[in-house]
View 1 (spheres, protein in one colour):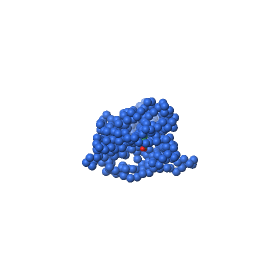
View 2 (tube, protein in one colour; view 1 turned 90 degrees about the vertical axis):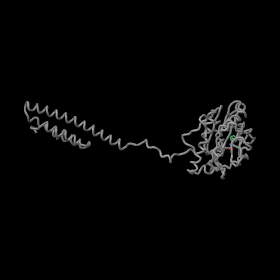
View 3 (cartoon, rainbow, N blue to C red; view 1 turned 45 degrees about the vertical axis):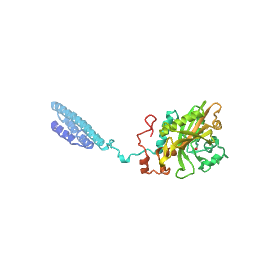
View 4 (cartoon, rainbow, N blue to C red; view 1 turned 60 degrees about the vertical axis):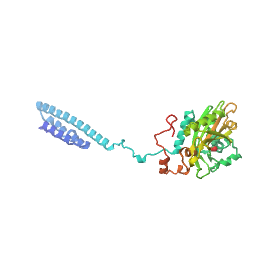
Length: 359
Ligand code: PHE
């Protein structure tokens, strides 16, 4: 090797580096040149066979070759790594700009829309949303709402009872959202202003009744709350919900064990010409139940009726949706029939607000 030609060595190695098209091939070139038994290493080892000036000159020349080879290896290594990265980036790219196909766009169910409308109106009046469980204890669904064991009103609820627990307690599928009133009063100090939407259940099934349906409860508790507040709040709600400024609203005496006095709210409508028009007319439609919270219910919740009073109301969402959107039958609400959904559904981005308009 003493007669090594540094220039030729350098040309061969650099050409091999250039030709290496992957990291493994490059590593082989490195081992074959700079490794223990590599060409350049061997050439350097054989320097000892030269003397004096020749050894120095050859030493310098070989060092220069070594520097050049090392640099070339580094450069080629980064170039290969970069190429590999670019290849991966290209192969793993996700085209997020793909446009959605219009035929798969979903719509908002009329029930969801009805609830959004109701919440928008009450949110504007300062109500907050509260929730309770679908599987409820007998105490919250009945007893604390002033319907003790033997109360006749219990029979009217067509209740679904669960199998009794080990301790003989029978839970129920809540028959109304009113138990949320109790849960709220147990956990919150007056002033209270809540709206509680949710699923409710009764063993009843025909064109206008479903065993599972939805209600929305309202509860206001404060000092000096009177029937006038109840009336003002609900008249305002009915007019906003049906979008009729002069909608006639009537409070008809009624009975609920948990309110005293109690009323049912009717709105004016007309059935002239076969159709149903909400607004002034000869007829009335019942849309919700309400009343002043019965002092006994306040007592169940440890609220002193001499200090705080309030009102409550409850409405069926399906019924409101059917009236507002002219949907004749209740059953398709739960059929997931896309044709029905497209006909009665709402555009997802068109969220209701009292300012921008309800549906
Ligand atoms: N819970 C009653 C029902 O289901 C409605 C209601 C709620 C009435 C609150 C008065 C006050 O019919």
